[in-house]
Length: 188
Length: 145
Image (cartoon, rainbow over all chains, first blue to last red; front, top):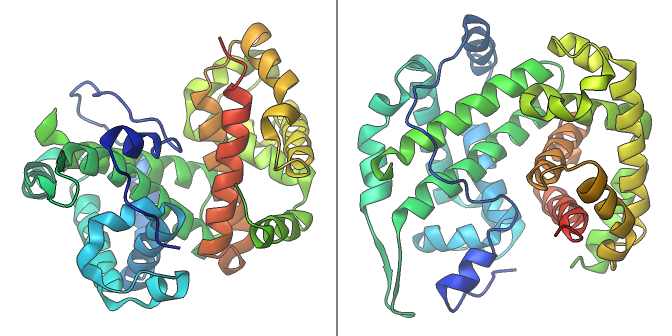
């Protein structure tokens, strides 16, 4: 099920049709209400970071197979079950979700919290010698982060059918979008 | 777009969907999670709180209509553009809806299915449904000019 790499950046960009690449958003601080913070924290307390993290990343790689190119070093990603069982996917998923846990403690200063991670994701250029082109990392940060954020929401929905009310969904959507923005901040 | 296995797994899961409930929930959640979408439904009355939205009878009725249309689309997975041509013209010429909102509603529907089916909504099913909702959104946007 592994997709072939797109031969040109133009083709690669056409793969991004599920969600429109958002233009740069104004650099305003995202404000979370007391209710939103409480909702996020109450669900977070029940989250198994290992389970939700690994499943979110696995779903990203399965539902949007072109994202697998970001994880070439992860070994076997050749089937859904291989991805779900891949130990590097699990480890990285857990790492990503722990990072979310940190975000939840600092919902009023996500940009500050994610400065280092933003530099890591944004400043590293990915050069593909096979195709002699460069994928700017800002594409990786904002867009893929939004997709991964949406995967986290879906995993939360599957695990917490009662708690995942519309208000809860709204709060978490706001959080995942804000984290995606914070990660891309170095390019704003 | 979809393999035969994907089509049958999508149809099988969708067969278990309570169309009148899931439609209302998806539309309601769209209006709550992405509040700017409420501008298309100002004539629906009280949308002032999440509870008001989710309980609003017009939201439920319209949600049911939308999902019935979606169900009908599932019978034409090989020609979604043809199946949704009239609706595409309606949404462009009469309703002036930004096509981005179709993608948002599609994603909300995936979340609602995930919530209702839990572990049964496997990554493979999610991948198949994502292709379907994207196809429907594209079909609805196809007649825009």
